[in-house]
Image (tube, rainbow, N blue to C red; front, side, top):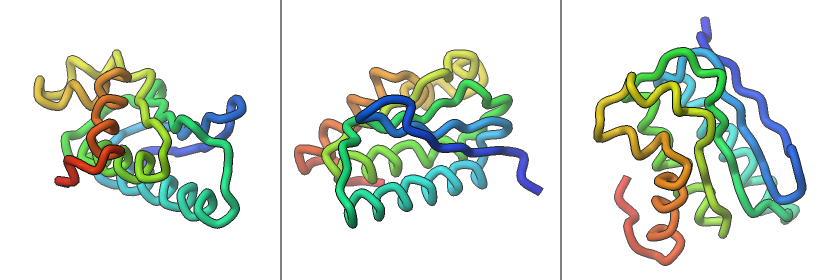
Length: 125
């Protein structure tokens, strides 16, 4: 049984948003990556106007370090297509993750993670 739910939409032109609710664990992280892979295939096939991909974690009730491992992979998937990636709505989770993982949940930090990948550096997992 899944303890999470993902929905995707385009709240405005140029923005693709994936909302995660429930538990953000390994399964939810994998689900997020599959959703972004589908978005990337679609964008690669038909093009698109997306400039920013947003992971909205407002509805997340619990988070695991294993789930957070999906964030750097999401950054790479999105930045390879010339788009920015950001996380929003995760402020309530900051106290529940180790200090080293907190930058992954901050919007400005997540976007900065994409910059080295876009320029061709930093391809470590």
